[in-house]
Amino acid sequence: MIDGDGYRPNVGIILSNQAGQLLWARRIGQNAWQFPQGGIAPHETPEEAMYRELREEVGLQPGDVHLIARTRDWLRYRLPRRLIRRHSKPVCIGQKQIWFMLRLLCDESKVRFDLTDHPEFDYWRWIDYWGPLREVVAFKRRVYRQALEEFAPYILCGQDAPPPASNARMPTG
Image (tube, rainbow, N blue to C red; front, side):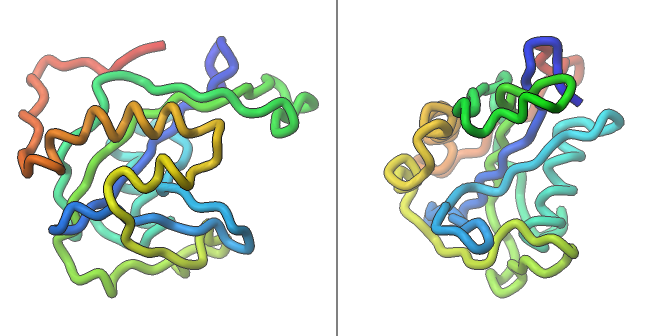
């Protein structure tokens, strides 16, 4: 599902431990590190997609985490020209993402990558809060900075975001 501007709807997951460190995962067979992320299916809300991706990519269930916050709006990044698949229709030029900040409630030994036939990651580690900005691939860096800056008060100050208003709407566009 690609929107009219060429962006694929997606969720990003930032998982923290009690010390405020973040789960940093290595893409299988590569020396590329990132936060878990994945597409939103047409029938899913971003929160439903986040919990599905959390289970598929990291092996965790909703009860294993506490939802701290989500980004107020979509964050977008464009793919480098070499990664755009121009033969697919419609052409996807990048991703628009709703990001979620979670806190791990269970033992970290529950993190696993072997619950699907095609795992995304083969290794993970805890990293300091701002560390991903030094290590993530350049074209994702601005979005990572936006998400981390928005979530910093909740992790670095130990607060939870206020619950969304009952009439809150999903961001559009």
